[in-house]
Length: 258
Ligand SMILES: C[S@@+](CC[C@H](N)C(=O)[O-])C[C@H]1O[C@@H](n2cnc3c(N)ncnc32)[C@H](O)[C@@H]1O
Image 1 (cartoon, protein in one colour):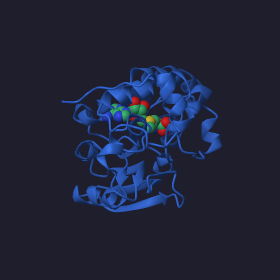
Image 2 (cartoon, rainbow, N blue to C red; image 1 turned 90 degrees about the vertical axis):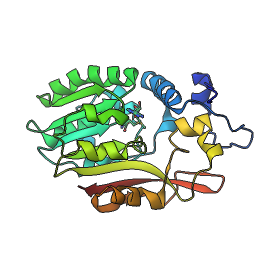
Image 3 (cartoon, rainbow, N blue to C red; image 1 turned 90 degrees about the horizontal axis):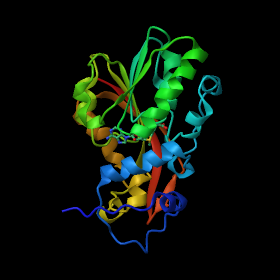
């Protein structure tokens, strides 16, 4: 049985950069509820601890409202691997920043579908969509409310798939929704050692996208087992983003194709 422990969000957001876990009990909580709660709050108020510094193409940011850019909770730039006319599935689309960047890259004939389970994030991305449409002159983006675990409810007609941090639970679904030319670009956090259960059950570390990190050697091999090809880290930060109890957490962007 899980014990649900919910931290008051204000305190959580103030303390999220504190990676000293020594005084914390190994709590158990509902991980999905906790993610919903933290991103719901982060949609309303910018939370700087949830992102790693990423330099996006400034020209593509011009068409995007500031409130969307400010709520950048990504950990890499998977949009670099998107091409003109692609149909893009953006998993965990958040405020919509990556989706709006992709919208401009794929152009009028392409399409971008953002998927997120958080109503506050969806309301942010959907309302920003009108302004982006006005700025770029066309609308090729839609945002669907849904869980990444239930991608089978979506169209199968998708080329590249970009994702940011929230994909570790959905490997098989990724393969199912991609078409024959499907490509992936996934920016995520990896760890150089397996993260102990005690840290995975730390509410702040889990919802801060730290202790749910993929164990680096398994990131590529898990996708390989599913039949993806040409897998490689297109990017891998030399310096760790965080070091907690001797475990290094760094950002990578995995690319590959079906
Ligand atoms: C780390 S943020 C990334 C947001 C965005 N891609 C960016 O770069 O700013 C993760 C997003 O994924 C969503 N998310 C997490 N787990 C999910 C799931 N299982 N199904 C759907 N959305 C999920 C969260 O609500 C949140 O908006």
